[in-house]
Length: 366
Image 1 (spheres, rainbow, N blue to C red):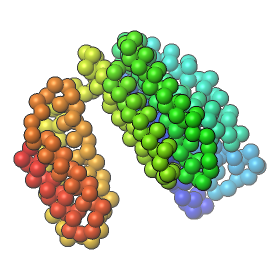
Image 2 (image 1 turned 135 degrees about the horizontal axis):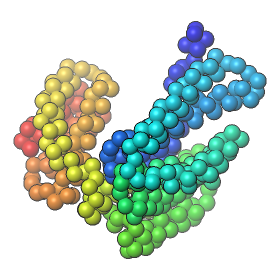
Image 3 (image 1 turned 30 degrees about the vertical axis):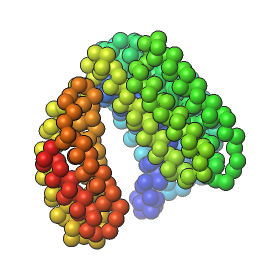
């Protein structure tokens, strides 16, 4: 136990890569938002813990293949099997509660997943083709969730196609940006071509009614953003990853909103009620947090996490407006307070506290 305890748990339990989180969470969240229920919750568990299990099992495989047994080996095996058990439990939950043939998209994921694991075992998972295969394998969880929730095959197909276009374009763009950040001079035109093809393909698919036009808009924004960043000096790889995560989340919201506007009953139908309920409590929390930060020279992590709740509430308010709600002057003012809180956290005392107090005042008026 002491030997295992000497190994940092985070280094074994969580993968160091950042891009994989987006390609994993986007499809499972999309399925959960398109058709919330136990069946899509099961696929969420399957995708999340299946992704997490890869890292500890890879560490254990590397140790055992060298006929070595380090302190981390047993720990990696224990964590890997625990993750795998949770993934299997999620799959079982989906099998028991699914209202449609969700396994069909997973058949497509099977050969892609086997190819990815084979390349991973050879330490070649960072090459372009294995990364594309892994992203597309995870993207099949979105149509699986749509079918498990009883939605039409057209919705399942559209969710996969929109994610697939974004995945391929983002991988080309992100790889090019990371290489530039490392001081290399890769060819730019493959990334530009991938971004342009994503826009053209999404336009044709939207015209054919296969994906929502809202998804087309996000892919157009992604292409513009990609072209601009490729023309500017390179940025750190961390910022590249955060940018891709942001566009991935935006695409998920756009797909759900697009289908909601088409009459598909998604989780966004609860957005107005949740926005109103959450807002009442956040007013009090803003004043309490602001008062506490006035007397602190540092900004604790809980304060940054609390700000995420306000970001979520702002998204719910925007979803309410997009679904036909009245656009009153108060929500934009509340967004001003949210921006002030974000800017305040980046400065020294007393600005973090002032930012939260201003946010609370504008929310109270709202």
